[in-house]
Length: 280
Image 1 (cartoon, one colour):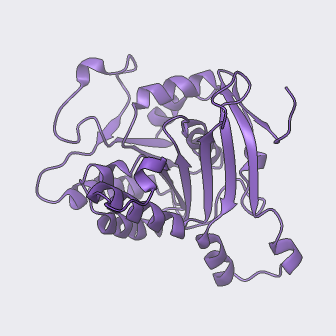
Image 2 (tube, rainbow, N blue to C red):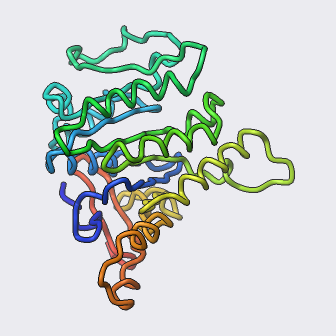
């Protein structure tokens, strides 16, 4: 399943250093195939990956990846992939009776001690980042469902944004997923604290993004041929990076390919992309 041609950054399969890639999705579509791409591409380019999951089970992701021909378990065992479970034991509970058949997988867990949530979360992620550095090669960091920390009031938007700023220089690039459902982000006359905090974090992190990958369900619902719509566009972070690293690009080149939107289909064999207007 090779769709790297749709995820190139200045003709490189790897995003530029210290960049943030934001993946937004809704409850109807999963960002799993995009996360899979970044994990696979980074490991194939000799980068270790720190994968922090705040939602869904890693076992489910392992199962999907196996169907797509990439064995994540072997990557964990070889040390190329460091997985941090940010949900299962967050409040001290254990779900060992539902653990994987592959029980030898070395997982790390985020546990809240009750003293400082920010410290508890920062320490294990930063320690794993240091562990993932190979000589001068920084690892990449994937934060799946980190907006859960805001929605559950574990961290405030300002604390979470500050944390992301502090780790941005420690990794080659950082992938962050957020939920973009209308109910959480739509303005109302009387917004709840949840909506205010969620919007603050979402808009704050999107503003920093080098690239934004948006997934939404197909307007007419999921069909056999189409799962949803994917849009890839530049974020504010792109223009900041270009300004800091001035290159001799013409204005004509700069205006090209600022946005791409396609239909896509996810199945057991992988992902297929279709340009709009495709007749099935």
